[in-house]
Image (cartoon, rainbow, N blue to C red; front, top):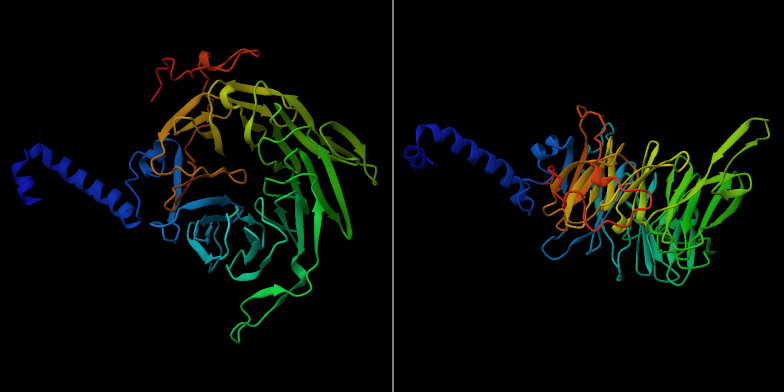
Amino acid sequence: MRALNSAAPHGLRPLLVSLCVALATVVGPAAAQGQSCLCGTPADELVAARSGLDREWMVQVPFDSAAWRLEHVVVGDRLVVAQSGNGTVAAIRTDTRPGGPRRGAVAWAQQIGGTGPIEAAGISASTVVVARGRGITAFDADTGRMTWTRSLLGIASAGALAADGKVYAPIDGGSVEQLSEAKWITVPIDGESDGMVDGATVRSSVESKGEVDFKPVAFGNGVLFCSARGLIVALVSDGELSKRLEFDLGGPASGAPVVHDGDVFVATRAGDLARIATSPAGLTANAGVVKNAQGQEVRYSGWHIVLEGVPEGRPLISGDTVVISLGPWGLAAFDTANGERRWQVPRGGQPLAITDTRVWCLDDTGFLVARDLASGGRREQLCMGDFTLPVVNTVSQRLVLASPKGLVVSLVSRRTTTAVPVVAPAAEQPAADAEPAAEDAEAAGDPDAA
């Protein structure tokens, strides 16, 4: 460095020193984590700040990233659970507790055995359950202690979920196995009680009327799942009484249902989007008012609309706005109260998360694009770098990015971000009967194109 500085013009020395410090700051931590340079990606704090984001935390999931890859990252209320192909299950804290791990720290990491594909983890308030092939394992959500493990009646077709003291695991061939957590007994291993196996477990098969390809979701004090042919089943309990509610979508769902404000939002491959509410008669896509036993009016706000394209994936919801991908027809947003369309743009991509006033999408070219939640106008376009594992967050206002090598980053909206809507270009506001756009406004000469 001394020889370099002596040979460099006096005016260039500060620039060279600054460049070396910057490279050491960026490349050093990245190399230690087995990752490539973060420069230019949303994980770069400067890039994130210019895009209206704060890097909340960044962590390397502990597993053999040279031989295996990260396969699932599931966002929960208090945890983000990352799973690799070798059976590693790692929980990252997203909140802080006195005496507990800090936010963004790996709270615990365990490894499950077995063969077959690993399904996405199910996260509840007290339990994390992971299905793999013909087996299922449960961990304490706070400590990571394995509370029990056992075999299933068949091969798991989707992730499992613990809810209301029971575990629900979709089984290949068209059923959902229901296990009671209360009947598991502790078994001493090597003189210590470090495992639980089946003692007199109450288990049953729930009729799903078709294979369940989506992980069940929590619904009230019960659970809700959707079959491949589009039948939604909700199992809820009211005290000692249990009820089964059904709703037929009339066709396969485009993605897993999302529960928001006690109602279910779901899209179908037939081109429908619905808000399904709970009425005294059961699940309904209609709105109405009834009186309860105390004579008070109770409103339910269901609705159903026909989309101008075939939806892809599950909807994202924030406040009074629901966003859905329409594939080649672009991206559209609707009012959660009545289903009225707010905007539609001819190019959108896969919605990943909503942070404050922006919806973040992974477009077809691999870029991360932010659009204004109020108007659909494009705000940012960022390079994803190594963060090629899509993480869809329907739970919180976090943008979570992950690389196959195990680096996970959480980004939140900056407090200084303004909520001034950006008006979408005229080329991004098609008529109601417009055909799918062959080119996006950016590709057609938008001066803001990156």
